[in-house]
Image (cartoon, rainbow, N blue to C red; front, side, top):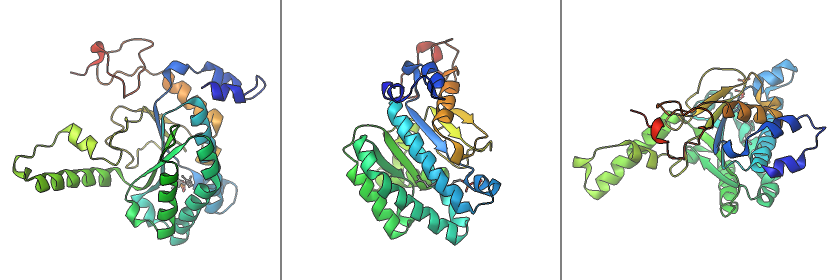
Length: 277
Ligand code: FPP
């Protein structure tokens, strides 16, 4: 978090917001449904592509701020399994933008120790986009700073079905199918996000009150924050406001309130008073 404060001066618009943050209660994992690129463009009488281009600048700003804050994981919903229904020209443009982002940002991601990962059915991506994405995943794999997890050709229901099928396949291979009993830990351990803590904070831009098939299993106890701000306008101040709002929440994980100061990340053990019945 010091890295953020060092880049700001008292005269900066976001100075007050940054000062108000409690460094001990930052979310460990932030997930974002980036929505509103098309509306942003329409309001300016621009083609939808202009909204997606401006959205890439918000991705850069958000990655940078999360890195400066010392956030552990940032998961971004970049392309859903449903997005293939869009016109071919828009879909192709989104793959081009992904490649442009990776090429342009890789040096800075490396410099800042950012690790890139991708979740989703990546096999269905166009060759060049998949190759460049996987090259970036490989190139950044030893970095130890912020983990940027790109959800691409991702669907929450697809992920759950894939997890079940992996469980079945493993049991078949081990000859234990007959006795298979699936539990929550097995499902979690076979999701695309296996090994990662669940998101503490789920942000959705552009005001829609839905989760759109995003991380359905993992957001069971995430704090939700919906802002009317359209994704291309979502920059540092908006992110700081979302985190400040998160810090005002009382996370009970189905149990009882522990009062002020009990905000804890999902990776932490629940306090005894908070254990769900
Ligand atoms: C939603 O806006 C946005 C998307 C479906 C794509 C998100 C992609 C980017 C921000 C750019 C590329 C991403 C990376 C990670 C480099 P919308 O088109 O649904 O907007 P609308 O609801 O206003 O039409």
